[in-house]
Image (tube, one colour):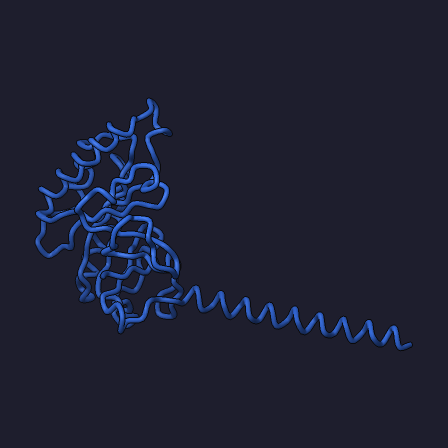
Length: 231
C-alpha cells in the first residue's frame, strides 16, 4: 500500500511540475509575441507592412506607439504589392510617416528592378527614405551571378532609386546576406537589421532601424505585425 501511495504522490508531483512548466511556457510565449522595446528608450517605433498585412486598421497603429510605417511596394523586377499605394495613403491619413520597401532580387538587373520601383513609388518629399531588403545570393541564379557582378548591380540599383527619391536608401540585409557579402558593413548608407527580442549585431556597425519583433500580436490589429524601432 505504501508503495502505491508513494507512486501516486510522485505522479501528482510530476503533473504539477508539468502544469507549471506549461503555464510558464505559455506566459513566456505571450510576453514574446506581444513584446516591443520600451518607448521611453526608443520613442520612434513603427511597422513594416507587406501583402499579408493588407487592410489593417491604420488608425490603431498610433495608439500602439507607432510613428511610421514602411510598406512593401516592389519585389525584384516584376513583383508588385497591388495594395501598396492605398496602404501608404491610409498610413499618411492616420498621421504616420511613410516609406516604401523594395525586396532586391540578386538574379535580376538593376535597370529592371529600379523601373519596377519607380513605377510604383512616387517621387514625393513627404516619403521616408526607401528601404531595400537584401537576401538570397547569386549562387541560386541561372546563370550564376558572381559576387562582384551582384554588388555592381546593387550599387547601380541603389543609385537609381536614390535619384528618384532624392534621399539615401536604407539597407536591410538579412544575416545570411551580410555574412556572404559584407556589403552593409562597407556602406555608409543607413542600416536596418532584424533580430527578435534581442539587439542585432551582424551588420558590423550601429543599426538605424531594427525589426525587434517580426510577429507582434496586438489587440487593436487582427494580424501579427513586424515591429520596427528607429534609432
